[in-house]
Image (cartoon, rainbow, N blue to C red; front, top):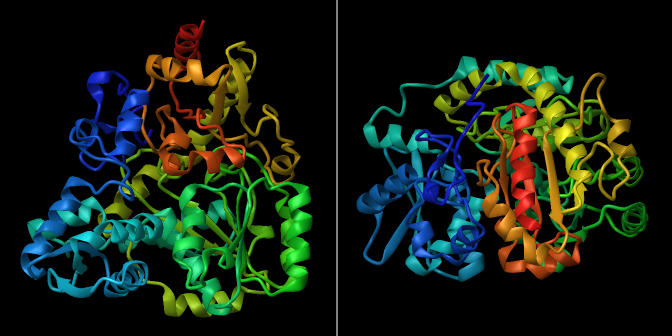
Length: 503
């Protein structure tokens, strides 16, 4: 398998350690409820212990060293630096910072033009960091190390990138020529958003269903349409009634495009994407489906979409040690030629060669891994549904409060329901912290790994907007669980032990 089937990162003493235990891990152990709160509050006792974090949210130490070196070489007094993998990306960030803050910003080439730094007053740094998070067009830690150590051009990964495109194409049922690779899943979605924006720059986008946080933030903060309320219309529930609302809106004005997750993160709800596809064809706007939680092999969604975006960081990799994403175009849809032409102008190959080599190796057994993960997750979900301590289990396999007929409509033969589930406990305010702290599985951000991993999702993704999340049906006490390859009995017993703390 691609990564350890057992990772021990759940004790209080494990705070800040990488998950898995390697230099370029993309998750970090936040083992107790209070550690997650402390991270969001910027508590030095938590942030100071972190040896890494999810790389879009937390600058990897090697990447931070690269920024410091760019500052030493390029910055003027009072300036700080954040480096990006190309001049075009850096200029997009600079434009965002100027628009948001009005600060003086400039772009400088570093390391013989291999990166470009956005140089700005220190007060603007958090705004530039927000761009790094939302856009996902980042300098990965492996590239930072190579630049700092002077061997950045040694690996191009061209052969591995072609193999990856072919592997994604095989999974999606398309040509490798229509597969594009990116340094993160968000970079893929941001690229698609820019394409849609170029087609209809003054029109609003639609976010259908409650999405992963940055899917919506891209359409709000990175839109050129102002105010934000006119940039995107958000239908948080993804219901049939809201489908009617989309159709009515599309009948009255041209739409830039529609974004939807299938299933959604974190409730695993499954909108009627077949009907969304019909509406998009009727009213002439492109449809993007983010199929990350379909675990690469479970659903066949490209036939009903113009574009499918996937975070390859998750199930495709399985190892938790590399970020990547893909976009796939559907050549049978009416927007194909226009999107293909724009991609030829817009696309930059920013996917670092060494990361491509790692991902190609990790993903060789993706179908085998997902088959086992599907079975483990289904069994754990069925067990949790029967527990009196559990109020809700959100999982596409027929548990929870949603109708999953939409999932089954697009399900591939001999597949399953994925490895992600979310739970909310009874008397959640009183019990969740005690349960979470007692749970003896790795605890940190990320999902899709070959080892089980969980986090207090709403707390991490929406800490500054918990009331907003709850207004959309997302409990602040929701625990998201990514089920791995460990023995199923072992997984079930870990949850049983922790739930006994709720009595």
